[in-house]
Image (cartoon, rainbow, N blue to C red; front, side):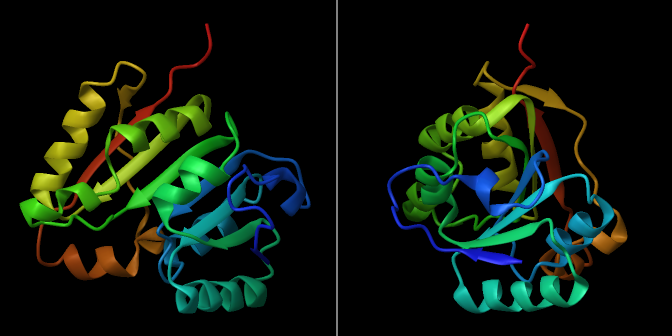
Length: 194
């Protein structure tokens, strides 16, 4: 694998240059310990996967696991998700985003820190290819409702059946919380070009 360290933090990355094969790109925002990312990448060698997380120790751990597994289709970027999608991901370059259990910032006074916001919706739309998809899950019901409302009010996206990971692809976070609470899942796509 390759850990990406941009020279310029204000312009889109030449992502295609970082992968050995030209294939559709999937991005796992907040890839955590990499359980989903690595299982999905191994099952789908026909796709390139970019794992993004703000914690360096997580990125290093995922990097070691990906190298041991020989996953040539995985690259990693230590970056906060909003900034990464807004500034570093090229337009019309992403086939699918996976955004599992983003921080819900449950206190009302902290809601401005949530990932899902109108500016983030703009960044998702700009970076998704026509027909590109966004798959989301959260264990926080109010945040789930807020996300669904945000997408429901944005006619640039259409609802599609929710993505359901197979057991091997469940994140460590989900494995813990699925025993304690319901997991809200929703998926949307940028409509294909006419």
